[in-house]
Length: 506
Image 1 (spheres, rainbow, N blue to C red):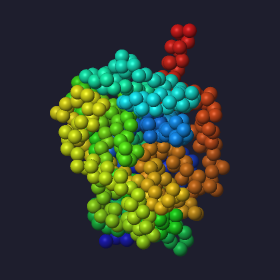
Image 2: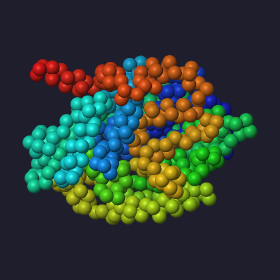
Image 3: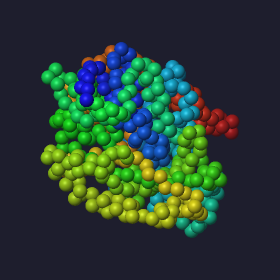
Image 4: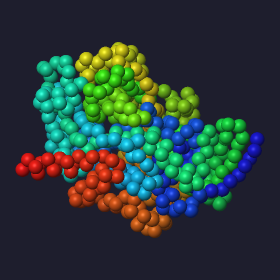
C-alpha cells in the first residue's frame, strides 16, 4: 500500500460539467497553474452530467413555467426567468469562445437549435400562459416568442400532441425558435479532452475518501486508487468539490463552518424514451407543461426532442422517485451517513415540512408503466405502451438549509459553498445546474480568488463579452451576442431570420 504524496495548485474533485468548466476557465486565465482531477468512475461526464441522466434543456427559462410565478395580485414575476436566461447567455458566450479558438470542435456534437415551448390545458392555465407570454414577450431576452390557443396553429407546431386530442378543453402554447438542446455529457467529454491536451492530469477510478486542512492552510486529500487499492495523499492550495450529489459528504469532511447545518434530500428520476422512429420523427421541440400540485420543480413534465450521438430521440418525464443514494453509482447509506449532529435538526424540520413532497415521491415510485403511460397521454393522446421504454435518470440532491423561511427549508437550485479564505468550494443542488455552469464557476472564482479578479477581468471579458453587464438593460448587446453565438455554435440565427421576414412583409 503506497503512500505517495504530491503537491499541486488546484484539485478538482469529480469529472462532470462543473469541474470541466472551472478547469477550462482557469487554464485560460492562469495557464501555468498545475491542475489535477480525481474521478471515481472510469470516464468523464458519467454521472449527473451524462446525457441520459440530464434533461439537456439548455435551461434559458424560455419554456419552464416554474421560473415564472403568478403572484397573489395575478401579475407574473419574471425575475427568476431573466436571471436564468442571462446565465445561459454567459454559457453560450464561453462555448463560442472555445469553438472560435479551436479549443473544442464540432459544436453540433453538443448543441442543436430546437424550439422551446410551453403547453397548458384548462381555462385557468391558458389564462396564466397568456399573462406569462405578455410579461416575457415585451422583454428583449425573450424576443420572438409566439402565443397561440388556436388548435389549427398548434397542429402545425406540435402535430403529435394534437392528434386525436379531444376538442372540448381549452389548450394553449408558446413557442420560441431560439431554444437549444444541449448534450452536456458530450460537452463535458470535449472539455476534458481539451484539458488533457493542456497537461491537466485526469485520474479516473480514483476515489477521494477524506479531506483535511494542513498546518500551512493547504488541503490534503486521501485518495484511493480503485484499480489497485493503493492510497495516495495529494495536497493543493485550492480544492473544488464538484462531485454531483457526492459533494455534500466531502464538504462535511472538510469541517469548514460554512458547510455546517446543510443537509441533502435525494430525488431520483425516470424518463420514458420512445423506441419507434416514426413517432420520434413527428415531434420537433422541447415542450414543458405544468407541475402537478405537490411535485418538486424538477418534476415538471416535458416532452423533449433530444440529439444524442447524432441521433434524434424523444423523451418524456421525469417521473420523480426516491432512493437514499446521492449518486446513481452511490451507496444506499448516503442519506443516513449525511446526517450529522450539526444538521440533524435541519433535516428533521425539513422532513416535517415536506410531508406533501414525501407522499408525492412515494406515489411516483409506486406507479406502474401503464399509469406512467396515462400521464404521457396528457401530452400524446394516442401514445402506445409498446413504443416507450423506461430509463432511470440521474440522482438529484436538493439542498436543505436554515433560511429566513425557517429551519430545514428545501432549496431548489444550484449553490456554491466556500470557505471564508476561498481555499475550498463545493457545488451543491440541482437544476438549472449544467446550463448555468459558466456563471456558477465565475461565482466560484469571485468567491475564492478575489485578489486575482482585477488582473483576470480583461481575459474574462474576452471570453464572455457581457461579463459584468446586465443584458436586460442593453438590448443591442443581446442582439450582438445572439448573432455571435449563433454563428460560432452553428445555430441558425432565428432572431435575425424573423426580423428579415418581417422587413420583407413590410
